[in-house]
Image (tube, rainbow, N blue to C red; front, top):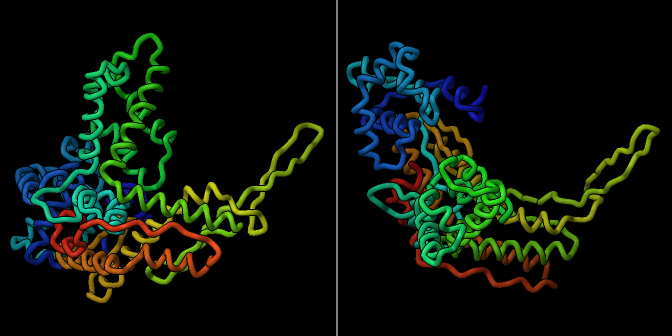
Length: 408
């Protein structure tokens, strides 16, 4: 049982030490419940209002959860939502909620975190605003922003009587494009995006697919995947330039028959392990078995290095931010846990953690990360002519300090 597990695991786990809710802790419990029930696309004040409007129901759930399953069973994270109902009810019973000793982990999650790191790397003002790196009155929804571009292209094609656009018009929503947007930062291919979208389109029985539904769904999935990936590039042009630069550097390095390696901002050396597999066959009287072996003796796999380097590099940055935040929280005496880009602490110390995680992100991206990486490559491989580091946009990274939906 650990916090990396499924919803039921997380719903059962509490911190070992209790902390008083203090001035704003109860507000964060209410926000946390709204987040867990899917009400996370609205402002913090609206999330508080939603939870306050359901306080009577929350008390009923805490008293008899099986009799009031309608409130929590269909939540995005039902068991964590149930645990939060219990915690809110206990706090209300305390009388003065500020004195209530809470043990429930409350979360702040990044907003499409991989794209947040790419936007920060490239100082992409437009893309950064779409993933909440800048102040706003309500959370920006990057999936909805991509969807808006996709629908514009779909409408334009439908106006030209494009067959597939005509079929799809009125049937493409946020859910259809969400997975592709999420995985674009991790190098999803055209084929991968097509398969993701095809799975969503198969869930739409009201679409007129014609005499051969499977064939038409495949055609529409391929078409919509191209529109979605193109729209992501339009919205995050800087990210695409950085991905292409990283991929090109990888190809140049592997031509020297060496693996791609780099140093994270924490000083951790990373070496990509991708090698070609060696196959050998064992023949018996009954069958032939093919076995594969790989190791440092095998030549590097250039294709795998190229496709994996951009997402691996960004993962090394988001993990650095996570660990830097963990170190700051420990120094400040905060209890801290995390799952990738979901940072946890007590409700009573949420305001402090929010300050620390933003300061660490700002400090991280004050460094010339891409420039340092480029210089490292040039020093290690003086015989290779690497392309210039992509230019930067106009995003002021200091604005993250005031961006309340950066992690929310």
